[in-house]
Length: 244
Ligand SMILES: O=P(O)(O)OC[C@H]1O[C@H](O[C@H]2O[C@H](CO)[C@@H](O)[C@H](O)[C@H]2O)[C@H](O)[C@@H](O)[C@@H]1O
Image (tube, rainbow, N blue to C red; front, side, top):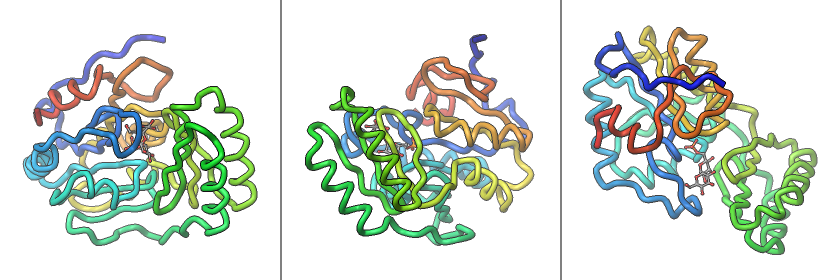
């Protein structure tokens, strides 16, 4: 695996549009979804960056949008949530093409029951999906995966792997769909898309920006990736974006 260089300076890229993952890219990973530390200045710094780029900055997260807005209150940005299934304007109106279904009540009840009897497992209830966080029961990952696979099959849900998480979603949307939908609309259309992300689920976004004539930046440890460049960690991302 060839190492990847750091990206060129943002100011050297013609007409850039930034598509930013959240966990592991803009904020450091933590023990659980609510344990993250979001720097006080982050929301306003991202807004200023977006303004300096004529609005061409969006967050593309696996979290649902209301969750991101809860962590970045009063921050007016384009946000795609639920792995591309939701997209909102900076003012908070939905610009998603289709409305995704909610998690069926019977699937939610079964997931709650499984989490209650699986020590160390944290169930994250999201608008359009469920997250099984197994960081504190890694020895039971196979069991959690088998349960999640059965639940997906029984309820027509879509399973994906993340960092210490198995996620079930009600749609097969991915971050590539989010990228393509955002880049098709003003003020993003015609710009050079740059996706920055750390997780395996970001690879769909990486592939999409490559197709659209842009490039991706992997954050963290080297792996097989569609990214062209790499930054070491969240601090390096903030430095590159000049939002420290
Ligand atoms: O696309 P992202 O913005 O990176 O969101 C991906 C998932 O992030 C969250 O889980 C991850 O971060 C947690 C907090 O640091 C960490 O405990 C967990 O191990 C990570 O997988 C979030 O909870 C998920 O809903 C997102 O899909």
